[in-house]
Image (cartoon, rainbow, N blue to C red; front, top):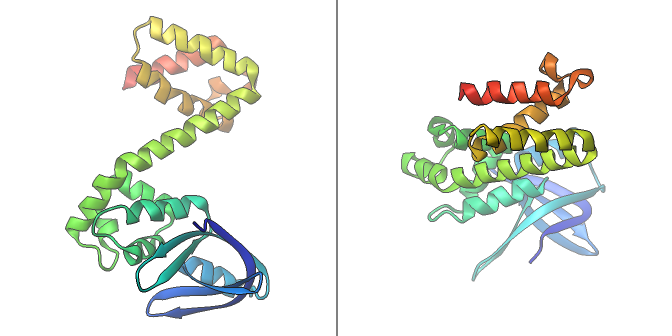
Amino acid sequence: MISWIKGELVSSWQANNKFYILINCQGLGYEIQTLESIISDINVNKISKKEIILWLKHIKKEDSDMLFGFNSKDQRDFFIQILNIKGIGSQIGMSLLNKFSLNQLINAITNNDKKSISSVQGIGQKMTERIILELKSKVITKQIEKENFNQNNFLNENRDLDLIFKDIDITLQSLNYPKKEIKNLFPKLINNIKNNKNSSLEKDSISFENLLKDAMNYLDKQ
């Protein structure tokens, strides 16, 4: 399986609303269907004979081999998730990623924004419903995993704060707040600390008492 490619850009072009680039990698020319945003970036910055890196999805059929290239692994992985939905092919996936950024697509799916998704050519109401049904739980799980990863990294770098959060966790559970709600709350508190969104969470005033008070305020409003 080909996961990514690094090579010299030879050319780029558009044909029938599809976008392509040709990359020279160790003397071999790889023709890759890609996104309009990548072609636009190449044209705006006048990239020529420059090294380019793309994350790839290789689709092999009886009569053809196709490569699809993306700027990020997240884009590529989302494209693969789309392909796993019954009845949806590669061009529908590319059309979605051409019209919307990855964050816009994730927001549309999590918010049941059928109007946005069905605005893509070739996607009707039934297909829109299928996309949301199939992908909603996956993108939400991915978001939670990313938030937890960022949270753990932040707490590992701030050991005193890590100890405070562990004490808050124990205290909230002893007050019979649900474990799931506590777990979902912590990333919000950490983002507030990072962004100084709440005066009681500014670095000079961070304490067990202040954080516990804010945590309880959040949970009591739910």
